[in-house]
Image 1 (cartoon, rainbow, N blue to C red):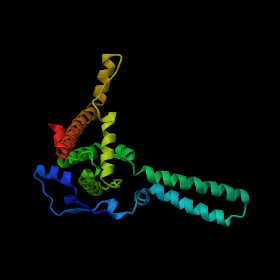
Image 2: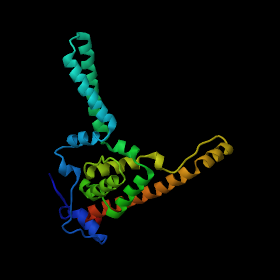
Image 3: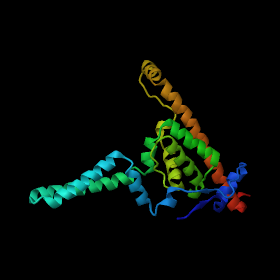
Image 4: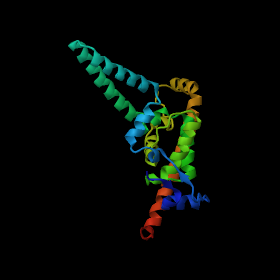
Length: 227
């Protein structure tokens, strides 16, 4: 258990303090402090999904039937079912805890909250600088009744990198053959497009803050290279 303290995050803390925020002896506890490994966290998190629970119940039943059934053909089929269910369970437990899955699961409101945390806490390429963002997002997901899939600050950093690659949040580029087709499409999706454009603005703001924090980190670490 690594125990996260703001005072141990030297560069991260200095950046936050530059913004007038001093957490002193404040201590955060992330899932990486509660679980021995990411795999254990993934299994526990996966059990929050009903399909995973159903899969494990079916796995257990297939194992029991495999032991009790005397027919060789039936036993072979049950063994195959058991193996397939085990493989599915492992893949599912890994996938639901990836940044890719979280990116598609997040609503526009969730993304806006995530970008605001980046702007407020100014993380950079060091994964530990994302721990504050991670803690706040976990609290947000809990308050919103959503399942948490964030293990540590590195997950938030990875999530941000994936969101930067997401073209769906970008400005809309409509390619149509006629002006009439474009007008119809605009009238149909006007509200959604305005939200996406605003979300793109928030993402650009978060990315700008990220770059500024990254630059500040390297300048402070190697001031001779900035001259």
